[in-house]
Image (tube, rainbow, N blue to C red; front, side, top):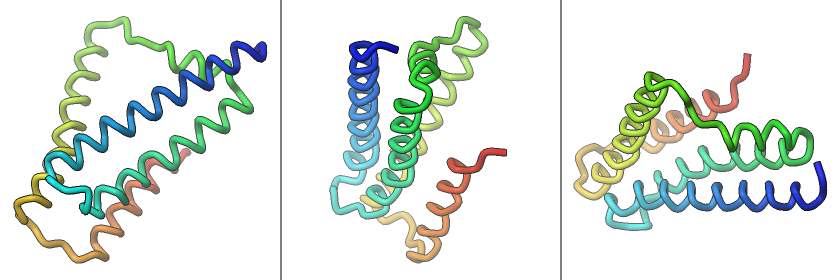
Length: 128
């Protein structure tokens, strides 16, 4: 990979990372009605810190793989349908907790919130 193409890939990765951060922040904090929603900040860290490490690792050690993964688009309509449904579920899974924070629907102990975030982090990190 040439230096110019590596720089373009790094820029594309950074742009997609920032766009993802912004979208997830909007989906969490707009429904919450506040940026003081600490559970949302922790969850964003659980999601985006591992993504940042993986992206940096791949930029350094396997930029070709990262470039291929950034260009992948599903060709089969069944796969596109699954991705659309998954996207809907993910959006609902980000919006509902924000609404829960705003309207006080539940009151979980801090330990439960942190344990759940730990499980998410383990799920993201686990690779058989």
